[in-house]
Amino acid sequence: MKTQACMNRKVSVVLPTLNEKDNIGPLIDAIHKELSGFDCEIIVVDDNSADGTYKAVCDLRYPFVKAIHRKEDPSHGKSFRCGLESAEGEIFVLMGSDFNHHPKYLPFMLKAIDYYDCVMGSRFLYGGKGAGTGRHILSWSFNIFLRLITDGRITDNLFGYIVIRREVIEQLNYDDIFWGFGEFSIRLMYYLQREGATVLQIPMTVGERLAGVGNRRFIRNFIKYTLATLKLVFKEARCLK
Image 1 (cartoon, rainbow, N blue to C red):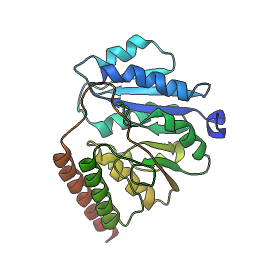
Image 2: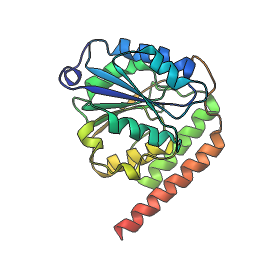
Image 3: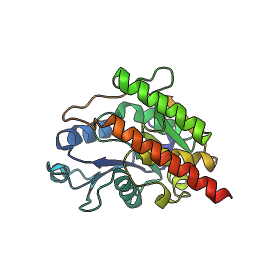
């Protein structure tokens, strides 16, 4: 069922890609099916993939898809920023390109955005589920650490499946947020809470890749995320002095 938000406002879905040639086509089709009849654009920002992802998107020739080829300074966060800055919609959707963020949740998220500034998925609410027991426990523990050190209320700062109003996110400083890898989501949630944005968290189950292998550097990433969080908190503490 179409929502009031989508009926009256354009939706921009931003998909950053890096070597997702075999996933991106089916994902675009799945998103378009879920948003059938909505005023929607899909923006694929490719980080100079070696497997021909950008060409694969261009070859689709879908009128509702915009392909952007970033050839320098690869960064998941900067790819999101590039997509947001080229978006025409009034509602932004940030999601991954490997089916970990399943498109089936989009209709409900877009309906809920009528009542909240931001709607996001969480693996750690009742009904949600992560991928693999060890990774799930590590992510759950890290998010407890995040809530304690930032005095936040977000249960899953790293999942990064987000629907947000354009006027809300554009009040934030993109330079403070969109760089690095998954830690951009930590910074985005931090600044949204600091600005008093209303955030709805909904339980989600992690989807499964159709092809390829995801990032498996769990320990290295969590060390990076910890350092990014400490840097963020110390930076804000200095600003308050």
